[in-house]
Length: 463
Image 1 (cartoon, one colour):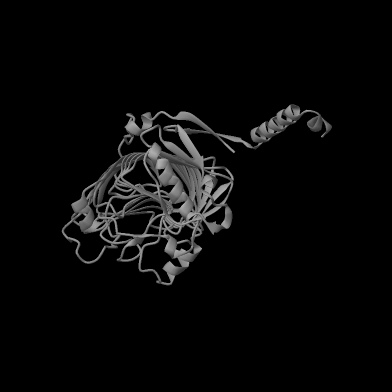
Image 2: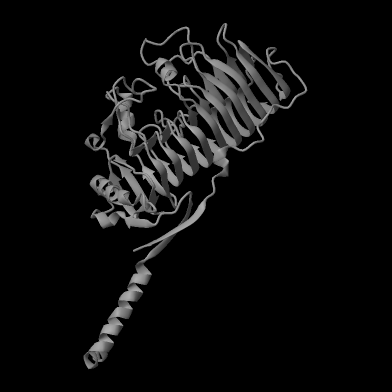
């Protein structure tokens, strides 16, 4: 204090030094990998809201993204969501943009329906999934975007879905529940390093998109929560899903492509998809489902190094008369299952339809389904493979499979109708429609274009 009185200049210098020390101490550097780094960044708190878990930040998110969108042609921009609990309704992203969640940040989805805009049904579906009307916009939404990254240091997005699940169970919804993340008609997407909790319905739904990278997501929902699928690529081309952990109330991953007559008309298939290093726990459905919405076609799906515990099935194909479309060129290898109802499950009678206008003559084409190197323990049934009369599922190949059955074994282990294919080194012995041959089922050796994406080391400083 005497020093300040004795010399004003020394006092100013001392104050400046202390201020500098405070700023250095209070700043934080975030480091992460991404497809693109951004030249500009801002923090959500720059837009005047607080992360107390009670104050709505919907307007702050919208204002921040609108202000940062001007940087799209100038190196792009990043919005940092800092530590805190940030209550928000639905908001839209912009192109050349990164949404980054701090490791101690939680996005809390609003339970106020007024904070969820109503949008039309997807044109390839014709109606909503929960109800014939429209649907609520997803929490994080965007359409016709390019170069979008949603990432963090494992920050969380909590959908607070229980109120939506209860309304759905009681039949109180006239609109389809919101998803956590949905991007439409978009290109060059990255969704990574996040924890997703209690989505009102599906968690991640890229639709009509291309060049999609989904990595290192941790997804949680109660096993009895309705339709809380983990990741649902839908009518997308060139997609990579890897290193994810999913515990959900429905399929861990559901590969989709449009619904009945609407999908046949829309005609945008899902193709060139790779799923690897997935861990799936407890869903009351499939580890990976193909369909049942597959009327636009599903082709060239590669799944490898999959672990599943307490699931209904491994890779399940779901279709029906009226779907049309196709599921073909499916390749699966190195799967490890523990406690499962069916290792192999295909059905041609998954008959939910968007109304009565579907064409009963529109038969699906299911062919070229390949499995190899599978170990399964504590299994109730080895397989349930049910094609369609006069429209058999063909080209099924199963090789090098070891299935250990439950202590109380079912008499009919391979239930096979209207299928054609071959097997090799499979135990227990398959059905007569899958005769033994000395073969190894194929798996492609080429890389998909999405496998060649190069990641960059990015960083940003903020106070």
